[in-house]
Length: 404
Image 1 (cartoon, rainbow, N blue to C red):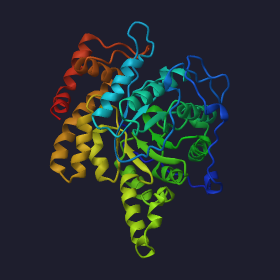
Image 2 (image 1 turned 60 degrees about the horizontal axis):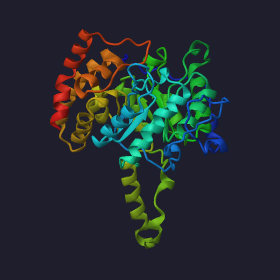
Image 3 (image 1 turned 180 degrees about the horizontal axis):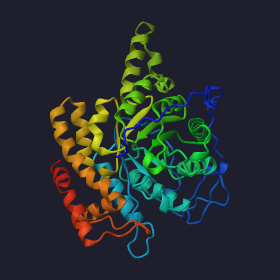
Image 4 (image 1 turned 30 degrees about the vertical axis):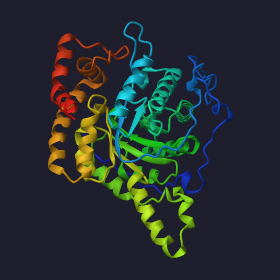
């Protein structure tokens, strides 16, 4: 895990554009009728998304982000060619959904997004959406990793994610030229504001210092960005539960979903409308937080829930989705001792996943579930000794998973 540091906030009087203008997503007509193909986009902000399959029309519906377990899925490849293995991607997505997870995320670190072309990214997301829909999980949201080093390409990835059936965009801050950011917090806020203004799908901030050269967003920056109407959550892989607690507390009553309530209550009598509206709003806040705060690793699931978080977006759930879901359920039922017992097993298994990364998790899947394969080169294939070590490291976790 990364050190539990909360980066200092900026001291200037900077105010971002979202405080002055109404959010209006920019969607070009070409994005409305996308089709999946193997070619790359012909222009920086539009794509030739084409397919002959029936998966080309996703009928975008609102899939709210609710508390629970979200899984950053793996991207699987054919062993001999390293081509994207859509059959395994689809089967894995359905396995996770049937285990009771709340949502899936494509194009994350576990999904090897950095190894994929734009067209392959769309293929993975479209395959996942189609598999979920056909298995009866059309309600399940898909979060799509859309981070890039330029504002322009990040917006492009958000639009392509929408085309492919994604519901939300998970965005890392840019970092390659971070030493030139002046000051860093202003540049980062400007970046996220510009992306959120232009993206056709809502944004989830991804704070993962280990992936961006140590750039660690402070709670002050995250809370300021949370006010943007098209920024709806954060994934904290920094491991800082103090930061998580501050963000959860500060974003609890943003009232972002005030206009989402059903108009059916308008037919009730005026004497009971105020009470009914208040009760409905409270239930909605419980089901759909104004700003979803997720821990980025399963090894501090319980700690994050106690601190006010809403769940996890964690790679370990690729191997043990039921164990992760059950830990969250037990906490919600007030069974803290039982939740802690599961958390101990989950945390130990997560240590194996953290040490092995995507290579180790795929090896664990292969060893215990019979599928997983290898990461795309230049990542190495595990040696037989490594494969045995990682399989053993997941043993207690898998036994727990099979008991649920």
